[in-house]
Length: 104
Image: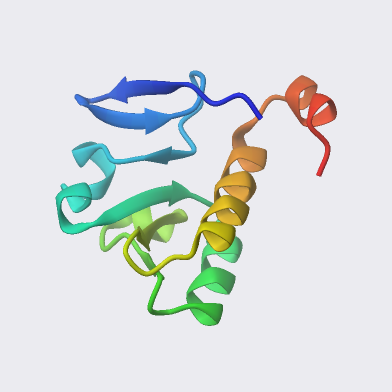
């Protein structure tokens, strides 16, 4: 999977014109300094992540959180879970041509 690191509102984000994971204060309120990343999931995906792993995942505590913006505790998440949730967030935002080029 090709992912390019870019800037969004002065902070790192990952995507290609499609933010699916970021550390921008615009969405996160500066959570990167607190050891969190943020993934842009559906509210349903977010509910499942928070229910399964509440010590790792939590909604962003603002209106973005109600729309699926999800904090990830980077010190607590294992690499396999992080990889899976990054792929989930990427698949939510990726163009159809990339989804067919990179099937599950």
